[in-house]
Length: 370
Figure 1 (spheres, rainbow, N blue to C red):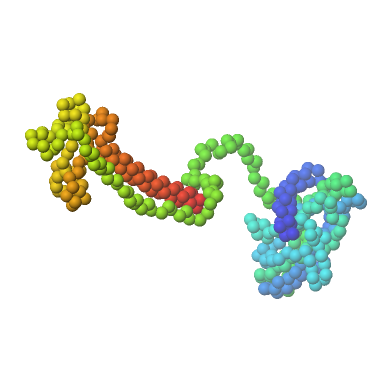
Figure 2: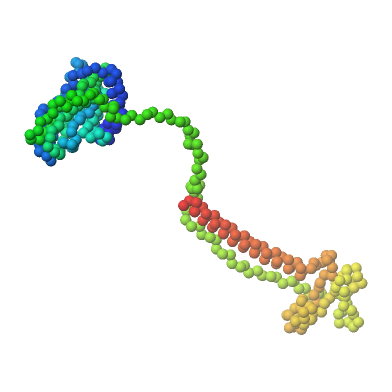
């Protein structure tokens, strides 16, 4: 409620210049009466209270719609204190209580208090207006001069007529032995309240571009990643791949069957056949080889078991690459073993690489989410 009243008061202050300007042009002399029942006496240092009453005396069918003006007093003799719209001792309530009204000292000039009131529907009541407290600072006396009084009367169709009154002296405060001046208003001239309110000159707004003529700032904050992963928790990396034992098969050994067409290696004068001879050579397509000692480096095909039993075994070797009976088993056995080992190594490296890549991606995604 207090906030609502504050807003109304601000609107009221903004409306006062317009009311005063309208009154100055169209106002007529009215019969509004401001009074204070008695002059108040006191000693230096005392705080005294003065009640003020208001009687609009509007034409029939009119209600008080607005009021503005100022009250002047001697600031060297008394200091203005609180303003109240109730008198609890005498059970009085202001006719403007709960309406949009304001009492404010003029900070630019001592000894002047301004007041404003407005009500769109009008107020029909009259009588007690407000109570003011003053502290007596020294011996002396002062009266209260109301100046710049402008007001309006509103009818049932909310049409208003504007009025004003000349400066008037009301009530007063004095100390023992002093007399309250009675002609204070005679020295005053009518001065409307708009002279006390500075209205700022209108300012023509210069059109500006929507962005104020400046480039749009670039922020360094990265946008939040919205595509959050559907899984939660820590992804367990795959277990380390251990080495797989590989069994290398030995070359198949064959024992040559007796062949009458093969020359006897023990025969005298028989020469060892040329291992490079083709099947069309004089020596034939197959040659025999006598097993040697186990540690003979020139003969890798020696059978240790045959050496222990004392048997003399023979190993058949192809003479050329075009032998349809048996290819070179030594080279065929070495190539598959090498390929298998290479394939296993490549697979292990690939699995480790994929696991590391997955861990890096997961950590980067979590960092973006944070």
